Length: 127
Image (cartoon, rainbow, N blue to C red; front, side, top):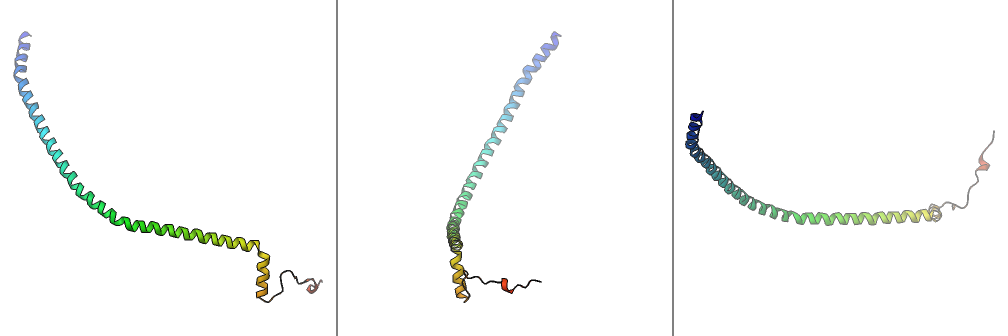
């Protein structure tokens, strides 16, 4: 058993430096790939910077028509509110002064005023 442990120790003494060199090589390869990835990422970000500038310019061009559309929308809302208020006020006036309106319409149509009612009981015949 003692001989086996001595043989394993000799093998370990010879293998550990070789395994250390292999691990260092893998770490160097990983570091090189990481550096290349960072460079590629930097180039991509720089390309996106130009693209973002173009997008900003396009947004600035679109902003003026959007502002016009917003102003137009506010104007349409104001016109709607004013017309609604006018119609509401006219309706309230008519409902408050319905008698005057009826008299005015009857006078224009050359009829008797609303206050004078025609008796229709005389025309009804009972069987």
